Length: 256
Image 1: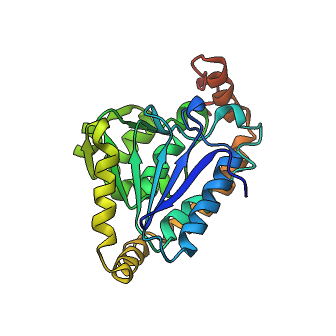
Image 2: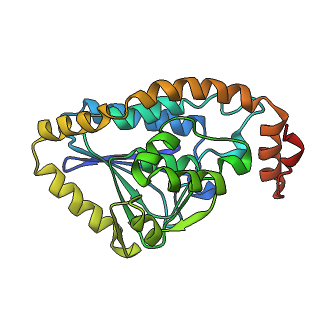
Image 3: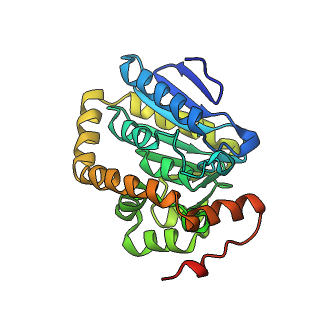
């Protein structure tokens, strides 16, 4: 498949997967998700690849989530996001998120699902779903609670605030924070250390970690089915209309 939204490079045992839509703060659309899935599948099959790095183009954004301008009335009906989440979790190789800027919304979920996250000191983290009439009813919520704890995860989702890289490190949301100019070098060092480890041991360790939370996959499947129905409501559409109109949404009229 010809890549238009993603850059893909394999070098010295590392597969570099880069969302390449900097003009949209690396927000993903249906084609972006399809290309990401293809790149991860290729990295899975390639025996020469031992580590995968996921990042975004430029120095402003890792990924700002689903492109609201691409969101149809019935939701992101062309986006197979659940498959992307599943392959990032299940690929039997460590996946490192190189967070070079905004990790917001669905982009925040992507970094959470990765095995490790190394962030620039300029990175910002947060969720926006309830502000735009959306939510991640799978790993983006339940697994986030395993990472930062129930109270903090609920705060992140309910209030839709943004958090600095230092705050993310303090809550255990990322593994390390470095100056932006040193981010690539730091991630390369992490990859070098990972490649020196037994690939089978890493594969087994990842499977063991995943086993404890794999039940979320089933819950998420049910949740995303419900989400498709929610996207068809006027309440959800008010969120995306407000975002595109650059105004505050009026959700109070939907309180029952």
